[in-house]
Length: 546
Ligand code: AMP
Image 1 (cartoon, rainbow, N blue to C red):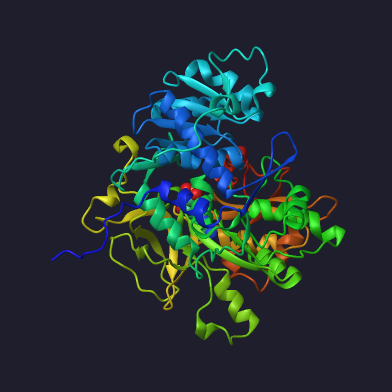
Image 2 (cartoon, rainbow, N blue to C red):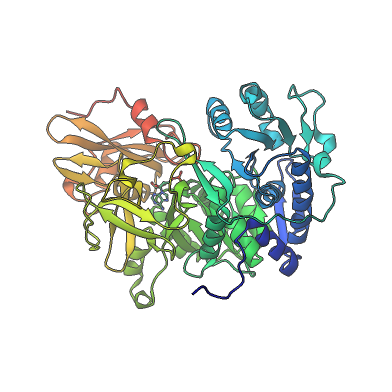
């Protein structure tokens, strides 16, 4: 017997309709590429998204065709989130930090038909457009009078001219909720990137889950600053969760330095922020010497790479801001786990609470996870055994766009139905997962595994260390030994021996790095993660001290 409830597909258009009708006056504030602040409301987003949907129809784009963006976090990008997916097309957010060759490759692979870009990416588009064989319309996200006369890009039009005069009413189409809505290519640190193709259903379920109190805890009372880019896994789904809760959104545009982010947080009374550790490091580095305080910020979600305990402590103890450590990946829309305490932890001493908080957290309803050993057998949840982390759920990829690059683990008997994350983790008896490494970054020394994340976390707790990356170097006896590449904080002195001595009592002797190499910078990938492949290349002539 079937239930007798209304059968309404979960579609992204319903989010913008809801925000318009029930939170129409909630604000959206954007720092624009032009440098000024733009301010309007959810009702304005909805109205202009409907106009943009008409503009897309005007191009005779079929349902399912891809509309790409190369854009910072801002209001026009937000309008496209709803216009493109809501009208049945697929929003393809491209990461502008990728190499131009890779951008052209991705646009061709996705068979993008339209590319909408911020003016700061005009030189990039000028450099790649001749190689993008499928794009038939270029749209510059700017006012009509800001478009330079001769850009060399055929048919280029400004977004404002494109949507101007279009009707402000639009009937969003209804279709199967499993229809594709947006896509995002993985960082692609090895080989060509692969695309996760999200659906309306997966996006809405993820948006619901992300807003839960034990997840991102988003409400109509929040002013949210997503520093995490809208070109990387839909800014962790925040634009969608904000629409379904009516939260205020504050977009930083391209200005992600500590000073700009701090000023925006204070000026717009941001209560809630989200970003990767490197961004928060810049913010803390700006605030500390100037003795600055937050007056409204209450919580910040930190994820994308391991959040060092020193950062959690700085936010928590020095600024009274709760850190929510999150873990996920492009293939998971992206949220998988988030770290909040359970009731039984509330009376624990601060040190014991910290031990929990620095883990990547527990599963969000909708995601299931397990760890398996090399034989594919499930490992115990004892907080000690570590193995390959597998996940499943309605917002986890089943396969990649165009069926590419599937991992055999997804299909063999032990892994069937589970997505292999490529991360190595422990899970404790309360279900808190802790990433020990990417499987390819684990250091194997004398038959034991050393977690590069643990070693890095200790290093960045040293007051003179700005950034640290730990990699394994071949060793004749132990197979591999860890070494540390370290960027010093400006004006700080630190020697190799001082840093090695700092590990005393913090790590087992055999886990302590054999050497420290001071570098000017650690190579970062397009999403702000440390690129260890590049670092290994940089240090290829390095020899361990005898
Ligand atoms: P991406 O798909 O580019 O977002 O990268 C996903 C990968 O980033 C994951 O598989 C992890 O290796 C890493 N990652 C994300 N969040 C965390 C975290 N909180 N701690 C450690 N690694 C993380």
